[in-house]
Length: 252
Image (tube, rainbow, N blue to C red; front, side):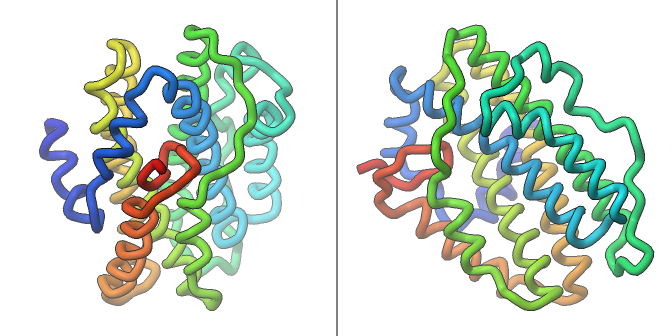
């Protein structure tokens, strides 16, 4: 599947396209540092979101502890600036199988899809750090933007709707990431263009996996709920935003 065909369903899924003003700001040389640092943290947060879903809904205590251990070196780097590119090498893989809870109503499919997603997000974290290191960009923690928090604040507070909503939100985050990688890539240098283009397939699959899981777990039509979050996501993307980030709205 070529990139145009891959992006077509994503562009239909999203309520609105990324504003031109965001692209103009993002492609400026002075924006590359914040784009890369925020992208690095977005990869970690995407992996953490999947990890939290597994720990809460799907795996037993031993597997939950294993997940925490898996993330520890990445979180220590991101939040405490401990470790390095070398110390994180090869840490995106997990060497043990996760075991489902005895009483979990959720299928092995949730575990399989989320584990694959986590592996890829942590590998992308390492790849972004490689690019930053090659460019002499020193990592510094930066606060999260409003985007993910803005959608999560609207999630239902009763199960299983909470889980379904979080999966739908995950689909929107992955879909928007995919769209922005495609929009940014032509404006970047050769190495970054190639890297961002290479991310399109995994992000597109993550979006589909989240939606499939949401539909399966809901056991009913979720189109109204998708439309609800499409409008929230579209407002966050198209409205003015003073905090420029990878998923921010229109720059002031």
